[in-house]
Amino acid sequence: MVMKLKRLSLSVSAFLVLIATTGVFAKDAVETRQAVGTYLTVDSYVRDIVNHPAFDGFGELLLTRDDNSSYYDTRLSNAAVLLPYHQNVVPADIVAALNFMIDEANGGKEIFYDFYTATQKQADDSKKNTGLFFFRGKPGAPFAIISPGGGFSYVGSLHEGFPIAREIKDHGYNAFVIRYRIGGERIACEDLAAAISYILLNAAALNVSSRNYSLWGGSAGARMAARLASYGTGAYGGKNLPPPVTAVIAYTGHTDWTRNDPPTFTIVGERDGIANHAVMERRVNAMKAAGIDTKFHKYPGLGHGFGAGTGTAAQGWVANAVRFWESHLAK
Image (cartoon, rainbow, N blue to C red):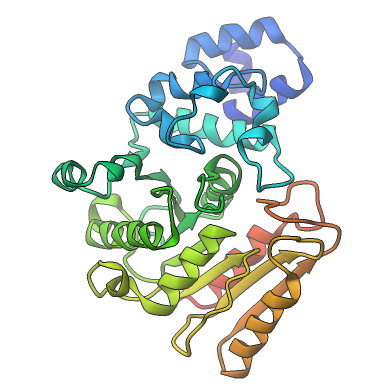
């Protein structure tokens, strides 16, 4: 079966997602997973993520809460139960992103980075539940940091972080998904400031550009991206570092902005009962009137937290946001 896989144009991860969703070649698929290191499928359990050797030491941080033990017996096909504020959760997208990370780890690449030191974690125990997941694009390319949402009561990386980062990576750019502390906007923004500082100060070692970075976020995570875009890392305990070249803001009721805000790409569903599209559009129009380049997209039939928008009217929004980012890259 391994020999056959080499002749297919599909990646191993994509092939196994196909297997997971169709049930084709189940026996061969098991043999292949054993050969290359246990891929996840939609029939895997949440505990399989936590216990996976590729995620040793940080498996819990891939999930939504600090303690996810009550969900360990949940299959990934039912991952939506971990994400109560989100809609359009696509288990195959989650599995594909996780399997990409497994591929990276099996290839000897580091996929998780602490942006707080051991000393900082000892001084504040809550900081142990933080980190960055790295989806590598082209060496030396600019990077995006994605802050997933969850109402500051959970972090929806499975749906609103990893699949989006994987798509950004496919466009050649580097993408980080932040696992920030749960509990409130201020500490989450402090974590994002610390993460930005970590990446910029270690850009050479990470092999990413220190210029032209972009801040992305959905819902609560969009508030974080917007705050840091408006006020900078210095306002949240970090060093005063260069601002992002763009911000990508998905479905949030955040209304604050400044004349120093970067060009901003904004999306929302017309049926969003949490982030009203009219509120978001007013913010965009005010920024545009102040001379800030903005793009606003309202998608029919969609509610809150649609993530990458797979199979919906929003499908393709990530590629559009990347093109907007590209239009503002400094030469």
